[in-house]
Image (spheres, rainbow, N blue to C red):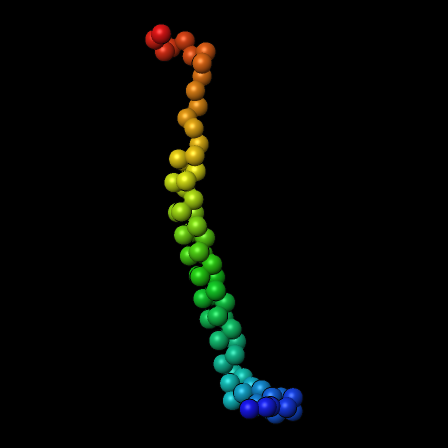
Length: 70
């Protein structure tokens, strides 16, 4: 199915006429969905990295600590 540029432009124009009034609402919903998706990805990434950071960071030791019994 080969569509010429003129045919594609005509389809887009018809789509705008039919759905033009709903485009701001659709764009808003797409933006909200993308924001929620990114937030979920960041939350998941943070949940996965926190235990690794805790496991990799050694406990601070102070060899000159006088409160420890020898």
